[in-house]
Length: 312
Image 1 (cartoon, helix red, strand yellow):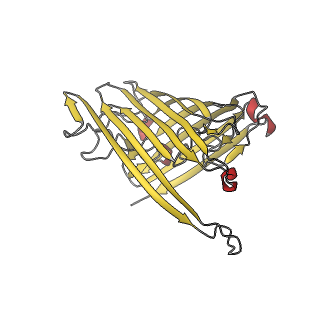
Image 2 (tube, rainbow, N blue to C red):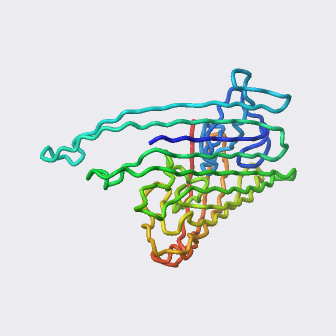
Image 3 (cartoon, rainbow, N blue to C red):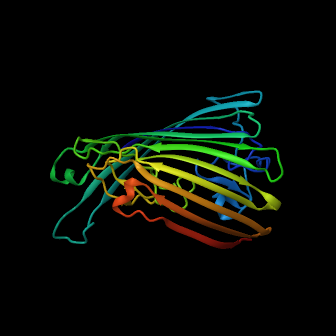
């Protein structure tokens, strides 16, 4: 399979990606991916209990890199190829199943920063194309052609008030496929299923066959962090498979299904740094299933946790 992806990011070097107090990023701090932020104890997720700060830095001068006063832009690319060989998948020498394959990935990227005050913008888009081997291709049939894509965009605004009150709006989508026999695979397949921070902490929804709206309101009183996430999920193609955050099938495809309402999730979270190397974190979540989930049931699902973390 060939994967072509484009990532666009924009931010302010003195604002946190997840909202809150403005903290200057460390010199030389690497820019991290869309679903990870830089913390005092290294990269992590904002629900882990650390005091997070921005990893945004302006780009350095060089080829395909430009700077104008407080603004900067960088363009880059990456090519990756891997050959694989596997034998004995069924642990039986009586039925040979030697398989060879080559994976390829092409990435084109653009990264930019602008002085936007208390507003932080982050965006990402990806496009996939190539060939996908379905179970039918083992019998000599033609592989499916892959035409899939996904995107996500997020904006965070921090108010200049006590507690660094902030609001976040996020919109993301990934293509799905309701036509299983047309020879074209439209379902987006993320290389690393890490939708936990963006598509709900309960992990019922992955970045596949989904259109998601996400809003957050949070603040940081006395060094703690309290925030409420509200997610609403709809299927890109109601007939297609519903995938969980792990990539596993949560609800099988159904060509007769017409409702795209997957459901709504609410996540209330709090983190409390107790000492410099000790923090507490807690969460309570509820998922309200929509009409698409009716075949599984209609009752709400709840989840929560309480954790303590220490690190030296």
